Length: 365
Ligand code: CP3
Image 1: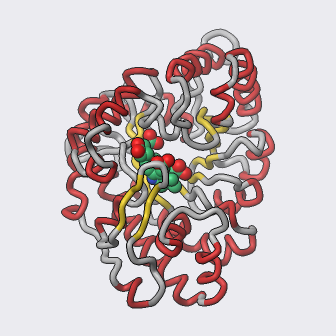
Image 2 (image 1 turned 90 degrees about the vertical axis):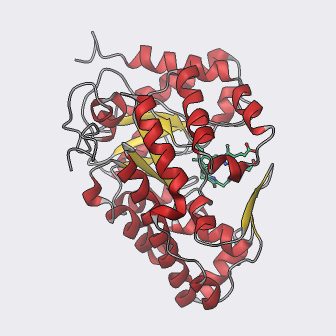
């Protein structure tokens, strides 16, 4: 696909000069040279920003995700403030699951909490398939944002089946994922039914965002690092592949991210991503060796480094840019989300430093 219905958004990277598909971010995802290494931050829209805290002071999290005016404003805040190379839609991984009929809430300081955790085949059956109408607020917000953002690409996202299943089976956040793994090992049939359904919901949710004009998508499998490679391949990879490969024809770069995934990087690349996200535990040159030469990498500054004095931050940013050169494309990011206590001025400085150090005017052609 080369144009959307408005004719303004090229999706194959061969776009008009200056459009989002010609941006440094999309070029890096496509392993094409660009003017500098692009940078954005997971959770760049959020509690590190006073302007975000002000909006959220009176509006619950899920409600803010369902109001296109607030989604648009919150998504734009870090772009205005930091000059990042991409915006990420303000939403949450549980938004489509709630739209599919699961009774849940996002509890401040805790995360998603599910009223009736999934235990049986009947519970799985109750997760409805979603249509555009079920998430019309996302459709509307993306369309507004694409206009507001101009040449800056917008990243859409969703949670991957394993990470979603973990919240649905545990009923909330879990350190060990014990109930999730007990279901996976003890009742593989039910496990695959659950993940198959979640893959369908996720695919539909991402298609709504792509149809509305996002320039790239990221699949967050934040907790996949809890699994061995063998179990990941058996219980998770087929479902994440259904999502990512299901978007093959959509023409937007697909990013696949997880935390603690050093042993899974190769397998995660196989799921059909164009870019693999790497946390801070694996140097990017080592990571690209595991992922292979046909995929870009994204990462991987430890978010806690941003709490250290500036010379420490600067040295780490330079190291990561250096190691990122081993990959055929590098999108600078953190290894996981921005911590709420991060000083936003440090984030702005990191963006400027990444741009300055990676500028390809003179030294790198
Ligand atoms: O990155 C961005 O700027 C876009 C926004 C975004 C949010 N959630 C907003 C949010 C994204 C991409 C997510 C994805 C998400 N949500 C993931 C995958 C990424 C990751 O962090 O691993 C996961 C696991 C969730 C589930 C979830 N939702 C958690 C663990 C929490 C944090 C709980 C807390 O209060 O610390 C949430 C709530 C949430 N989602 C917040 C934000 C800004 C905080 C809510 C608040 O401001 O009170």
